[in-house]
Image (cartoon, rainbow, N blue to C red; front, side, top):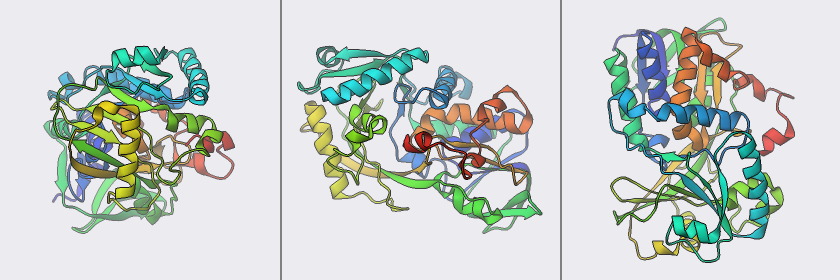
Length: 398
């Protein structure tokens, strides 16, 4: 293995492969390393949603909309099919309390420029046959889309390689190498790799590497359990979420009424191009435990069947759990480390890694090689978590 590069990218999920592709495309000498392989972690254990209407107006929604624009031409650019479809999506509303909160949320999003509407329960059932009769309404946005995250990561990686990037798997990165405050490479179980720049795109494992130079990152793993069914007839069109989880973030009094406070169950439902249904999910703080549990899976199934009775009778063939990299304010950490030159961070996307992968790669390459999108990273660096830099409201969003 060659032990030098202009840029070393650590992590081969959708974020790391996107970054590696953009850097190689710009002509930089790139080495992508991962302990396992492409999409072997969270990117291979998640749903397929590219959601805009779940995003809070402000930075969150701005990033998602910028990324959505890149997705429109991603298959042509990468010369690969990634099962990208823009079929729209809806958020199901069960109660008058949820309706009140979501009505205000939709108004905020519309003022921010998002195309989203509040529709009746009858209209929701017309768009999505098989929904429950008790739903009082739903939100609908034609801007939501979906993609196969595993195919996406492989497509990014192959495109990076076409532009000269080197990809090395089965390489355990053990820490950062520094000279004074400057990061000059990474240590691995196969020896050191020296580099002008190091990009940490290693999800929830990023803090364990950053701490080797004294950078403390508030990224924690948040487990999401999902069920995968047998292939079935087309029955789910676009993405379906429920308002319970989103409304509880916006109104803490609703969170207190959750039936499963430790599990954080909220519906995420979609159908793949091959006909399998992806049914999620949980949001659990259980450390690095990747296992699925009967308690979590039963809660997901119970919630899903209440909202979409048409799912009854469809066989589950597999269950998975991914560890999403959670941050206190719900935004990713993207930017240069102000205290450690040579270190760039691209982690902490939690459940938005798929949605934000394209724009993250473009932002990072502009941070390193120069470009207008570097400005989009303003305020997303690790220094925002230092004492006093985040408001109580920002810390409470997630």
